[in-house]
Image: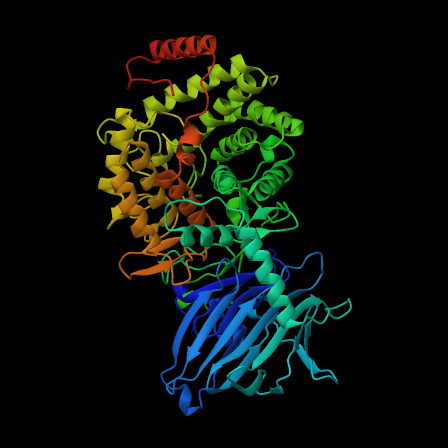
Length: 636
């Protein structure tokens, strides 16, 4: 059985990643990319689906009542797991993946270092390619290296420990004394090319440490708990696919949003929805190179016919992400089905148009160089959106219960036109700004009239709905209405009344909203950060600080956040670690502690010209007269 989700730590080489449990077992690793087939899939099945465990030998008297302590080497992605036995002997297991730096092969390195006394150890390796389905052909070279091959995939294990086979499992027993170190280097390469190069484990440790500490030294600091913000930024870097700049939502698939349930999705892809918040998190922290790479990935991935834009893409911009089930994996704690690919890639989600426009605008405001192709592409997107915004869609949460006129989708359509108008006004770009102003005003009026529910005193999930949705918390953050607008304040109150579970926020109530799946899921961690951001914008700084401190308390012992939290079971759920959760953590930290606040950056862009202001207000007043009485319409 796999460990609790919060008992895993992340290592990676900025092209793929592995999850390591507290008991020293690598239970998840896809090679060579984040979205490749897993060769260790015990996370979603059992040990026979592939794992690699190094731990004090179970047969040793000293191994009884082993205490485990773990941490990352400061400012790195190098994991240290310390095993302290009953007789106070201790070993440290050091796990890391060196950056490839142009090499084709990838390496997972494990160093066992004696700290006190003498500890008998055992290594157990089960390689299963194809998400735990394929047993490889295993041989040993004359040098004692272990080769495992199946089809296009091959791994080689190099270690001084003598290895042997036991019932389709490779094992090795060894003893480590204080001051000794024993290396294990597992390398991946395609089976039709030369074997991966030999790696000096200690030299690789040194260079990997230098890389991460050099990278973290560049970041801007906040007054809030600095370590947790740095850890989030390291996690975002680790989830970046270095060759392209794309950032995956998580390195895992099918970790359930409800234990034993069906809400199990593949998150090893890149969502356009995360674009603006990712850019702001990176740029405010001083990581302009990563922000530029993400912006450029965004432009390449979304390029093409505007009508074909998707909500997510593969790490290199792949569009075909067909969803299928993996029947031979039992699922995490029997949560089935296990899914590979994501059918939501084919959904219509209008908010992505706004995310793309907003991201490109803030990239320009933030100092990234002007991109003429980006502007041409943005104009093409708006030409399509002028009519497409009127359609219902599947919305931000990718519901499978049918399309609706979701409030957040319409708000973000407004954002697409608003940011493009500001491009024209601020940077002299050419475009039909007058037409865009008319469309922007029309969207604004319709949302205020049809999405605001007077009985709730709040913006509802969709037009003429009585359901609340946490995405409405973003209305002031994107600048659609000012934070002190009564409808914004009412929306915050309604979210507190309808969607809070304890101190945390549901995306929406799955028990009363038809999303095409059985009800039940945890509270959504990014939404809870959004509530903290709303508190900042509305002057409730003490509430924001208190909620932020509760949220960072959901980080595990090495600072990682999942997607959701099961308030009843007191456990994290969902894919892990979750990029969106760490992005939200970074931005909320800056909202609370920094002078330059992401929530104000996103909503408080420079004013329009005086002439544009007058024309904008005239359009709004004209639309109000045409449609009759409605809730007051404010200029953002």
